[in-house]
Each structure stands twice: as structure tokens, then as C-alpha cells.
Image (cartoon, rainbow, N blue to C red; front, side, top):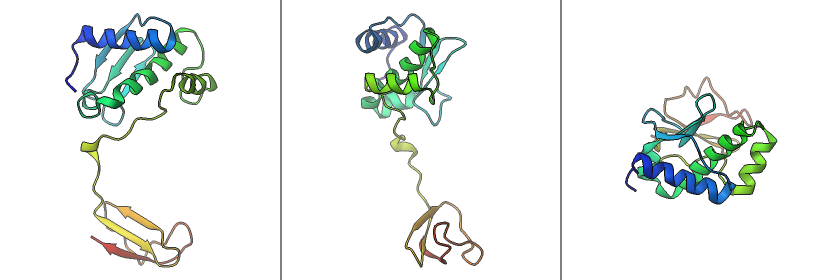
Amino acid sequence: MELLKEKELHKLVDDLSRTFFDKPFKHEVRYNTRLRTTGGRYIPSLRIIELNPKYVKEMAEEVEGIIKHELCHYHLHIEGKGYKHGDPEFKALLKATGSPRHCQPLPSSAYQFKYSYTCMRCGHIYKRKRRVDVKKFRCGKCRGQLSLSHE
């Protein structure tokens, strides 16, 4: 998906706000290239929604869900209700609007683990990016001995 211009992006957010929340979106929405691990964020003090442009480009099907999630924060904050992730009002609004709780990881940022260790007792697999000293560390589930599966 191509990045939308500022006015088109605001129109998209306003349309989703009117469709799912029956309320207009009156503040600013913009892209933030510094976002790394999240699809978007809501800044309560400025009443701004920021979106990660990588998600818009790579995962166009997720963008509507990300915007709805941020709109849940926005509308609850405007109304003076609990807008944080742990608040019951936030969880209820997410469920009512069909918004996702978390966004999927980007396909381009999928990390390749270099080492894989298997517990010799229970068979649990541990994936690590750094090598582990199997003489020093044990399985966290059953305290069994670990063995290097493959590199």
C-alpha cells in the first residue's frame, strides 16, 4: 500500500471514527518513522495519533485495526474515561469495535535465531541469538540438561 497524504490519512481516520465510534476525529494524525516495535501510538497531551509508515507499506490489511486501536485510546481520553491498556473501559471498547489488542510483527523484522537448544528431559526448545553454556544453564521448566540442536 502506498503512503497516504496528510489529508487522505486524516479522512481515513475520521471515516473509521465515524463508522465505528459514531464520533468525529478532530485532531491530528501523522506518520512517525521513529516508531520501531509498534504500529501506532496515541499521545494524550497533544491528542495526536502517530502511525508507523512501515506497517502501512508492508501490512496494509492491518492498518485499519491499528487505527481503530488508537481511536479507542483517543475517544476514551477525550471522554475522561480509562484509556490505558489495562483499563476495563479500554478493553471493553476494543471488543465492541473489533479492534486488535496488539499488532502483528512486521515480516521484514522477523528475527532469525542462530542457536536452538533442546531439553534432554522434557523436550522443550529454546531459541537464542547468542550461544549458551550448556554446562552452566539448565531447562527452566524441569531443570533438565540442554543440548545444542543445530546452528
